[in-house]
Structures are given as C-alpha cells and as structure tokens.
Length: 297
Ligand SMILES: *Cc1c(COP(=O)(O)O)cnc(C)c1O
Image (cartoon, rainbow, N blue to C red; front, side, top):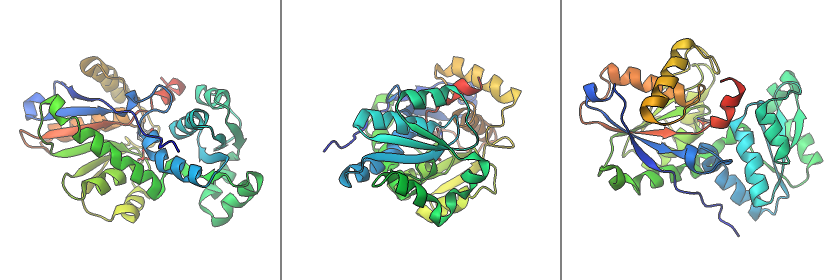
C-alpha cells in the first residue's frame, strides 16, 4: 500500500528589511514547493484521508469547496496521482475559473450546489444523497478539516526540525502561519505538545467559528490567534497588494493575497509592534495556495 508520503518542503532563511531592526530572524518552510499540483498544506491535510480511503478500498473521494478552492485542486490532483476517482461539490452556480478548468482536466466530476444548497453542508443528513450516488466513496469535510486533517499536519513540524541546521539554527521560538479552518494550526499544536507556541494569522474575521474549531481539536493551550483578515475573507486592498509585490521581491518567494500575503503582513505588524523580542527565531509556514491567485491577481 502506498503511504502517500510527502516530499520534503525546503526551509529557507528570509531576509526582510523589517526583521533586522527588531532583531528577529525568520525562516520559511516552503510547502508551496513540495509538488507542482498537490501544493501547500493540502497534501498534509489529505494524507490521512487518503490512507483511510485506501484501507476502506474506496473507489473515490468527495469533498466541497468554492470555485478557487485550493483544497479541491489538491484533491483532484491527488485522486489522479493515486488512482481515486474524485467528485467536487461546489458553492454557487456553474462558473468557469482557472481552478474549475483544472478540476475538470484532472478528471473531477463537478456538482454545483448553489448558495443555499452549500449552506446545508453542516447538517447531519447532508452527505446521504451523495453517499447514495457514490456508494463507498470517502467523504472529506470542507477544506480537509477535522482530526485526520490535523494529524497529517504534524509532519510539518518533523520536516522543519529535520532541517534546522541548514539555516544555522539549533532551535526556534515560535511558528507563524495562515489559518482558514485552523486545521493546519491544530496539527502543529498537536505535534509541538507545548514546546513551541503556534501563532495563527486568521484569514477569516472573528465570528466564523475558527477559534471554536481549533479548541475542539486541541483545546485552548499552545497557540494564539490573530485577525489577519483585513475585514473579510478574500477582501483585498491596495496596501496588501503593494506589500505582497514588495515582499516577493525582497524574499524571492511568491505569495497570494488570501492567506500567505495576509499572514506575512500581520507578522510584520506584530514584529514592528515589538511582539517578539530580539533574538527571536520564527518559522513562517508558506501554506501554498498559489494556483488560486490566477482568479484575482
Ligand atoms: C487552505 C489554506 C490555508 C488554511 O488552512 P487551514 O488548515 O484550513 O487553516 C492556509 N493557506 C493556504 C494557502 C491555503 O490554501
């Protein structure tokens, strides 16, 4: 049985001009570089789902997302790579975006649920008709969330620790990463077990249940959440875009505007506010998502 093992994400020092005055050192764990198609944190989140699906001899995988979804994109690519059929349940009405075209090209069957239909996704009976239509298929919650998703993300910590010497560090002080559902953050908190705090830069404003989701997975210790949403998920402003363009030049690293760009900007604010003392060593997780920016950049 293949173990769906993941390629190593490189750890790289980031030299950004706002770090030095604060005496803070930063390294990026580049999950965006692990694979051209199954990119970012999504392969980590899918790994345990893939193992469960294989163990159950499931013929296919079903999940949900929007029409720029990084999660559905990774799922379609993983299905094609590892021999599962895939079906995607999409929010809203049929649309043609670069992501949707890729989903089709990767062989995913698409069902458009409308907005009302999509809102039903938390109801217990939501999956019944899909399970009837696709008997034996493995159903994955939105965004690859839940405990299996978090468990796969524990590997992110292992990958980082295996490479510390390559950036000249023997240890680090904290993690900083973008959070959507908070599943990836929960995985880091589980793996760290209190050794290093995990800072989540939230892509959604308060009130979307992210704090509750994380608490449900790992309790309330070992992490801190920061609002990085700039007023709303997918809300993009000129300051953000200018920061991204400048950071891409300075760091030699691509960013997108919904997660990684907002997370790095929120980190700059905290560093400049003196949140991390001189000598702090931080690991920024580049969670990927670059395919999605074709939709808006
Ligand atoms: C999906 C995604 C996230 C959010 O991950 P969660 O585990 O849902 O918190 C962060 N960054 C990028 C680029 C993503 O695609």
